[in-house]
Image 1 (tube, helix red, strand yellow):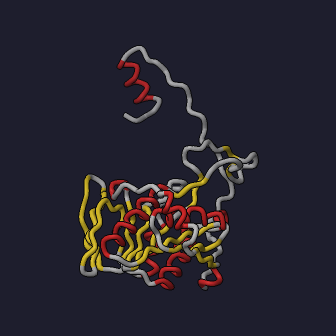
Image 2 (image 1 turned 60 degrees about the horizontal axis):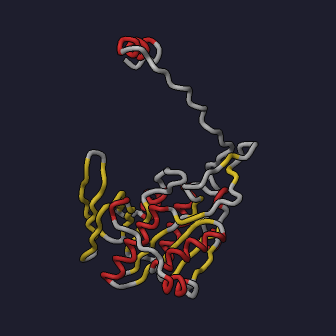
Image 3 (image 1 turned 60 degrees about the vertical axis):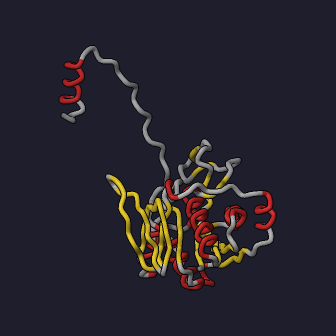
Length: 249
């Protein structure tokens, strides 16, 4: 069984970031990067499925040359080989990333694609769905359980108000949610082995994909500062404020 999983290089969510004076982006000097947390669940699930069914786990990232570090992290967890599609992440959008990933998938012909449900730096939740649409594959998003058998995947999904279960025919795209598993730490032997595992670098041209972004961020602004709260004398005054000032009642 051949499984393709993806990792995205993101700024450490715990780091405190600042905007550039002109609002053109973030000041990233001195800030560490790491694997998008939801992608760790996807990598872990891919490895678990490989351990159960055999085969190969291919780790793919779309980003700068620095993203090789995040690929190596996934390889240290247990992935077999990596592919970096090298682009300037500041000059791509979700549609571009989806087209590039779809091209890699068509080239690799995996039985299953496992991705994180979203990237925590943007939380736009689009790429996996776009990839499935481009390929014409079934998809099962927000997975909290996954079982593969006889050419099908049975996936438990987080949905509004509870959970549901779907069965999709392989090949398919599945996105990992928090309850799917507990990602393993990369062991020292795994880290040493990862240094020798192959990582191929491709360009959009190699894949025959137009990488020009259709959507670009032109400026960033901080949200307005919150006003200080008030202490009211009684419930009647609160109701009056809600009715006549906030107009929510």
